[in-house]
Length: 369
Image (cartoon, rainbow, N blue to C red; front, side, top):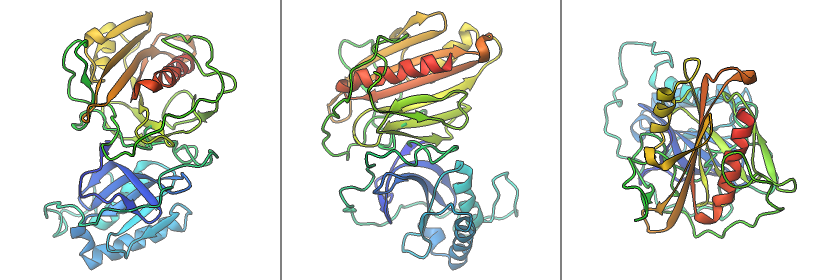
């Protein structure tokens, strides 16, 4: 999952600016966050009812300590009023395991046949004042150190981080089509900038665009600042704009799903890159089913080659601002074999980021084969 923060969720814990819900648990939440240096982390937070249980706090502190001894916890506050711990790198399951320890459950569904007394207490959120974080919180300096989870520390929540972008099967802010569109979009499942994002200054591109790509628009130019993404679970690597990052998400139905965004332009462009397997070869009905998961209408898509379709829709967000969504659905097979996998890319952002979004679409089309 990858949900926007809710009104009473913490927005800042320790040095981390929080942007999205990655996983929900009886004992708490796992949130996407970044510190003032741009280092990404999965931030585990205990629900207030669990935090009020001294034994649960003790279990949380012990589990955090064990993970810290493995060098995985850059910062934590298990005894703070809002109990939390940041987990750097690795799979989402490592962060969820801290909550399993608190609730005396296990990730595989085993454990005792009882629930903690606070498990059924309604989640009323955290009573927190509006945070006033340092202006640099959640920003990343020009250096591109720790970004990819899996083979390094994730490169964003590619929203991220973010901007927390709402995704599949989520309700929340999304794209409303302009009058020239083909009707009202389905329930949004792709990211839209958070209403609380500060006013943005469009980023200035370094270097010239590359030649036209295989799908739509330009490719990255040879002098542009890019970063090589190596997301765990994707069968290919790809270059993204140098200020972007990506974070893993466990939202169904895709076997591997990453949310990516411009870390330095909150309210800018971002979205998802996801892969789904299908029987060999991927037939037309299976390709159509993949596209139906992308909150776009069938009439939005146009074919660009035998294995690829592209969509581009313009509309407005919840605050009336203009936003553009570009998407690609492509099927491929390893080593040129018959297609047995599909990749979906859905990006949403201000119209001035159209070329940047198209570059990423073209890059992933080329890299996936």
